[in-house]
Length: 297
Image (cartoon, rainbow, N blue to C red; front, side, top):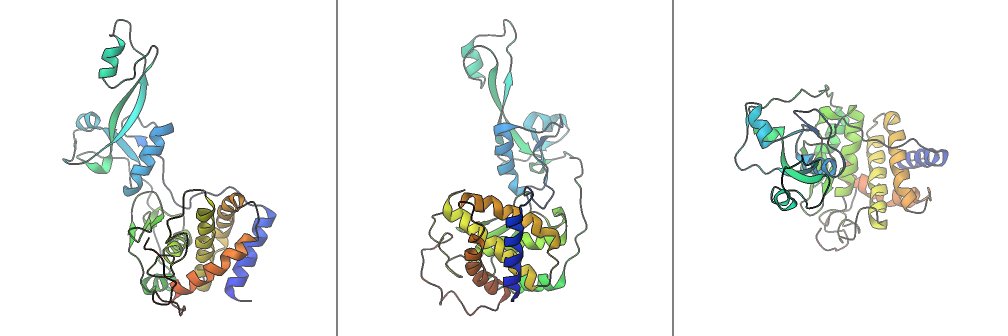
């Protein structure tokens, strides 16, 4: 059996035997207010998590809180709106006044908003130091990533991992944020797996045709392809994947559930993943010129 066949067989067996809930393999605390130390919740958490992808710190504060801390928000920085509820005090004013102050009309608690800035948008404000791990590079995987043909830029920072087809770049958290080097390389290979679908590489439908929306069939299928690509690349590099396959299989299971629960769909995805892995490993004969024509992502 080839490495690809061995990895496919192992993952299918794990899927069929059941898996644990998937979790992100890097340390990325949710957004918190620097002054109160409280975690943002609900809509605020969603907005700040999305906006915080470019920052390594999970701490946020308002303009006034930055001043009270002896610092300031840098000129030109843009913040994110956060909402909160406040109970009006007796005789504090009418509904029209509350609305003018940024609240909603009506009796009872008033919804108001303020603007939050990440601590990295500020000068003179210190945040608690977050856990920093020592990262020990693995030479063979480093070689593979550095020698990938037509490799897209890989940027580090923030608390999310993703590939942007329209701009053709990969975003990853810092290497030190990952629970182990194996998790970092696996995640990098996953995002590069997506990148192989770009029109300048293998021109894979789903990446090139703009048909993907979160959770739909095309998106779910592409996630299977990318995850299988990561398993193949790391397996071919001789990376010990025993610590990450449980995590990977659970992630695959979450998308297979969308695709009607058929674990054998991994085998179908493996065909596209083999081409993607061959491209990353530099063993593929396919080039942009040989790839099928497609609209630019």
